[in-house]
Image (cartoon, rainbow, N blue to C red; front, top):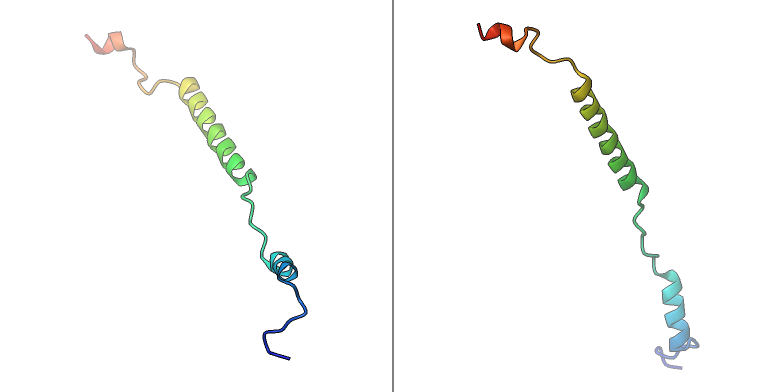
Length: 66
């Protein structure tokens, strides 16, 4: 019997190779979505603070024009 003789058919060996091949990795979406939600929450809180914050100048503009 020669060394190249095998009891496995080519179709069978292809099936075995496909079973042994690593599965393709799927990208997870939750890290991306959580980062986007965090950025949106930070932007909204910053915008709210800028709107609700008192003005920096404590004197009235008309008083400083004199």
